[in-house]
Image (cartoon, rainbow, N blue to C red; front, side, top):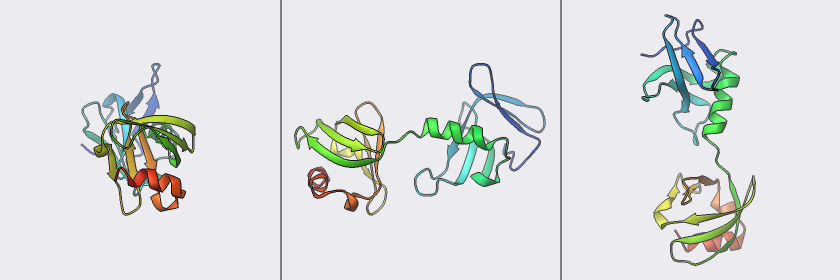
Length: 159
């Protein structure tokens, strides 16, 4: 069921902070989650509200198409869900074999991540990488060619 562009639908938070979607027909879904179709490549395009089972309840071709009352709630939930620090430099790696501890600088500050295997580095495009640490946190390298030479050297040993 897709409730596309129905301005009679409602989105709100309940007492527990969960998002609640009410369709134009009055059907209530608690614990809904907004998801982007293309979170990294086209973040403002293709946003859905899905139920606890992943079924699409509402679809917006563009985030700006959703009702003004929905937008702050959707943006807040997406920001919580998509927390992804961006690596700006790789300061040190413990070893060139995995698992390996990496000391990195991010747009959120300095941190250490553990790379379990080289498979935890995924290419998103010609220059972008997504790195999953051992705790499941995702780190983004938007443009690996923009990193300093030391960072590029460390990274090349794992690619």
